[in-house]
Image 1 (cartoon, rainbow, N blue to C red):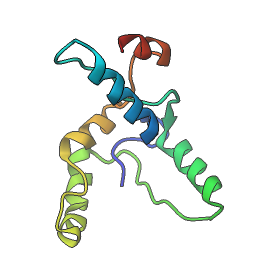
Image 2 (cartoon, rainbow, N blue to C red; image 1 turned 135 degrees about the vertical axis):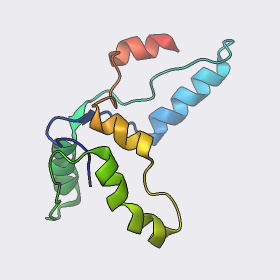
Image 3 (spheres, rainbow, N blue to C red; image 1 turned 90 degrees about the horizontal axis):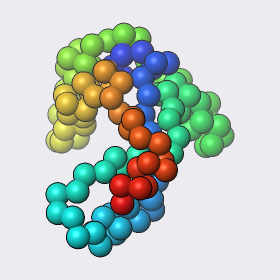
Length: 116
């Protein structure tokens, strides 16, 4: 389930090694309360990212993504998953970020690195 249009909503996945390296560099700064955008260098639409995953694992699978659902509806649809996992699968705030296409950094990777 995905809020908004999966061909228009973007995000920037980050590799765990890059995130760890970023955390170490930030920890070495003498700047309390430093905020950086912890994102990877490439921007993907959800649709394009799912195509990459399918190719990478060499499997065919179907992803049903009803286009244009508001975050509030997606959140309600995930409630059975929350119950089954005895956890919260996704937070409403995270869905709103995706719905409003706010999951990408306005900074280029070079500008983000300069923040460190």
